[in-house]
Image 1 (cartoon, rainbow, N blue to C red):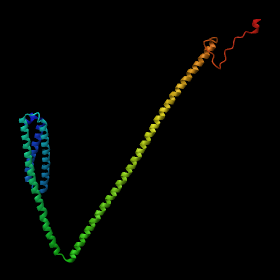
Image 2 (image 1 turned 45 degrees about the vertical axis):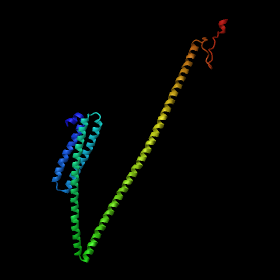
Image 3 (image 1 turned 60 degrees about the horizontal axis):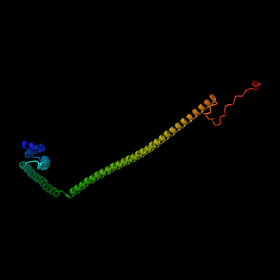
Image 4 (image 1 turned 90 degrees about the vertical axis):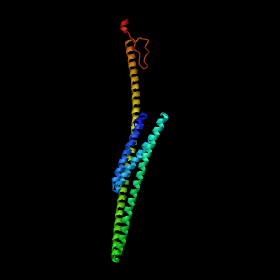
Length: 261
């Protein structure tokens, strides 16, 4: 471990994980020898197989890391890493062979279990049939047909219930699809209304701005006219100010006749 740590911390970590799996495999196969139940043996064997898959994956990862560091390491270091990898592969292969042996033994036990009682059961059926009378055979056949009919009826009921559930599900999906379509249409209408309202607001804003400009200009014109009128009234002889079209000039001062006598 120390030498691997000096080469690469990642290699040391991977090697530690592989060592933990090897210890778990050793302990697992020892437990497997003590288990007598076939089902428990099968489950234990599946767990050990999964650990071996994980170990194989880690060895491949170890090999990739070694190849990445190969150009950096000294020849002796590369040789040590290659020997370490081969040692791990050899140990994994030993557990794989042990697993195959246990799996073969377990399969043979299952074949014995299934074949043995089957032969006895067939012989019992032959003896039972030979000891039956014709009426008993007919009754037994009718009973079996009744059971078959009941099984068919139950299967039909299950199929009918399944069809009903499927129909209800399809109807619910169709209703949800229609509802989603209506929601999409309403959203489109709302979006169109918002767009039209935005355009109307912009148009109203432009009209209001135009009206304000016109009112301002009219106000200035009125103020100017009023100012000119006031000036003409106060100083009618001012020639710098032209007469306003439509506005009569101020009347000249007339002397009374009796004043000239």
